Length: 172
Image (cartoon, rainbow, N blue to C red; front, side):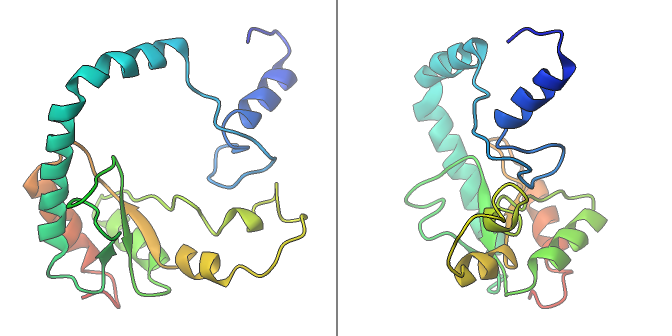
């Protein structure tokens, strides 16, 4: 889209980035509409490398699984890194530990992600819509974080993340 209308550009940008506006909370209903032709071409070209890249993701995931093995209060999604792999590492912590873990990790220079925030039902964009209670969503929002993960994540980096995570009260 090309426009000189700054207000229109702002609205379209929010609508095409999940309704976000500088935070992870949707301000308006939106969608993921960010795939450009260039990005699609890069993705298509990368398909030839996918079998080798998939193995590299599995190797990086194994490092993470081994690193977290001595942290029983931090659990990975079932089968992640052994049966399947993705480009993100989501870990479940004891209830109420998501915020303290995020702060502890940040204190060690490690960023995390709260992929779903407090749940989209509490976002300004959706808070006014009818819904039932969502206790599972709310419980998971207080216990799930995304840890750093990449195809080329070194063992030393995994160790740094895990050691920082263990500084969180309630996580052993």
